[in-house]
Length: 99
Image 1 (cartoon, rainbow, N blue to C red):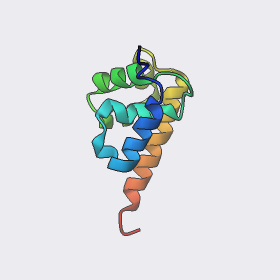
Image 2 (cartoon, rainbow, N blue to C red):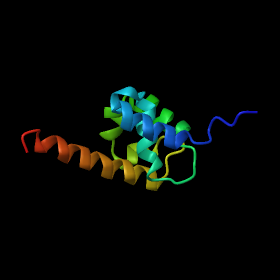
Image 3 (tube, rainbow, N blue to C red):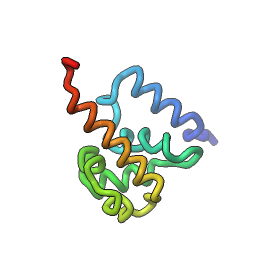
Image 4 (cartoon, one colour):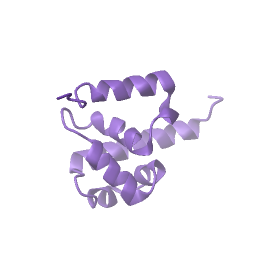
């Protein structure tokens, strides 16, 4: 039986690098972000639950820690990582392309 999950993280990282973030489905974007918060654990189910709950990557990245933790499978560490990542994204957006 083929174990499709072996190497999944690296394939997802490589696809984002080669083809850009736009090549990823919304839950895959969240999944990739969560990979850096939780080593050696499948993030697919939590990522899908987050996108389903908040409706979009934007919704996930603008949720509060408390709102994130209401989603089944989301730990304190995952919620905190998503919050820090969102802060970085918002700071980068504020800089603007000219800077």
